[in-house]
Length: 477
Length: 102
Image 1 (cartoon, one colour):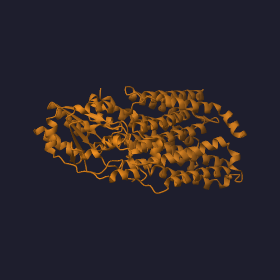
Image 2 (cartoon, one colour; image 1 turned 120 degrees about the horizontal axis):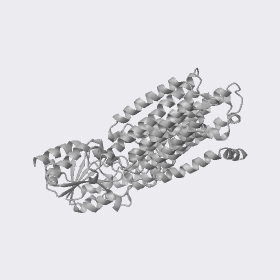
Image 3 (cartoon, helix red, strand yellow; image 1 turned 180 degrees about the vertical axis):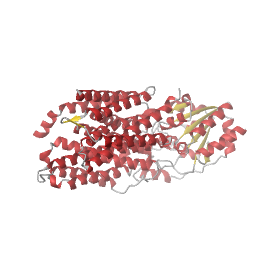
């Protein structure tokens, strides 16, 4: 009876995961979708704790279980509530890593369990104890989970600037070798006897650990969202391995669902940035950037600067101003100040709109979230196509910490690494004012011709500081 | 070869589920607008936290005096819960921002 109830719990959970994902992909129902999936998850967890039976035995160690749940829930909630909106992507990466580590630990525990059961006869071949299918799932869970864990931690470190891009010549070959060693260790472990199983199993974990680091290390920061999404689907597969191991349908469906959806999402993200997945992983950006360097060496003209008061003047007397927010705005936490400037300008009868590039910020959709947080009305956020239609009617375009998404090289220079990426055609406007901290190239590491065009003026400084000063200046006009 | 074929037919139910789920997963998010990529990724991230169930099972099956297994399971439960709870809360916070626009 109770086991049947548990089956129902898992069934409900699986269905809510599917419905939840479906609702999450539609703006109107997204928030509810998240709650639906969370409710399903709660049912599955409670069901497992109270109804699960294995060989007629209930689970025990309740104190440990609830202790773990409590610690995880408190820390998780606090971390998720405290994190700044701009740091959201690295938080997701971190949580993803936790999931991967969890899957790897489950495999390790299962491995240890099998070892304990058979340690009385150390000479038995491991292959005689468990069928190959089960062994593959255990090993795959350990390998994929570990890769996902170390990869996510590196991705987290890269996004918050603690880990720098690092690559060396022939790294792809080294990566391949490490991956091959991981698989070799897995095969070797299966061929070992129970008594000698320890070393190969530790080697599996060790090589997978190294591979996760090497896998993410050379990939450029701008491509991190794609990598996180990919690692996300890895963790899904690792979770599904656990589902296979325990013949648990909720884990299996949830894991595979995320594995498949995550892979598709990775591809969609690549498309939004007009990059191919292989390109991201092999890394033309991150691999030292031979193409990027070539673009950067090109002789540039001189740029001109504009003062704050001139900027304020130009904007206050414009009919229509388009703001192009980029990562610089996000880093400076300037979304609220930006909204304030927008209101002041509107009071002066200036029409203000925002042009949002699909990959503005650090992740697709990231900028929309940030501006929504600052109460910017939704109608003011234009998507790229709409914005490109409107630029020619704009008097002023104010670019806040965006660079690659307004780089005309994407259209004109086939040698540029971002060639072919859809960009915002800001040069159609009458005046372009670019706020940046310095002339340093953006994430793709390439120069931007836009900054040297006659209609472009540079306004250097931290986005927040500049916007605050602009607010004051415009007010006083 | 023989053993692989046996394994497939023994586990055909699961293999069917896996294949169907791959299609479902691709199908349900096929038309997601790019604005929702980040929240969707975050939501999916929370869903694979279902791995916590495995952690609970490991923990609950461990012998009370087997400290190594207990510690492994305990760590797994904490990490899994972090993934689930953190994932859903972060996603909700992101989507809360979207709701305000109405």
